Amino acid sequence: MNEKKVVNLLGFASRMRKIIFGKDNIKEYIRNPKRRKKFIIIASNVGESVKEDTIKRCESHKVPYILLKEYTKEDLGHALGKEEISVVGVLDENIVNGIKEVADAGGDSIV
Image (cartoon, rainbow, N blue to C red; front, side, top):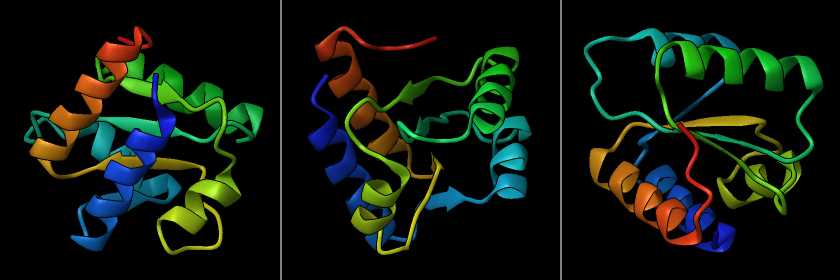
């Protein structure tokens, strides 16, 4: 999977203010039944408990996610104009579709 393309799409979503981050916001985003298309991106060096909790929530609510291999939370935060971001949710359905296409093309699509 081309992680650079995924992060570029996230940067575009960030400029449009169509991303969500923060523990409570991510939990609500995953649980929200009104939002049909969801996608979670997890940084490579996120804490083990945060990673496990996020993945369990995604799997139980059938939300697709990607665990990045090359981008740390500092890299991800920098790309999105923040200091560091561990987990990001995408609010724009077109960008969700774009990220899914990139993930599927790389054979790394999860869930």
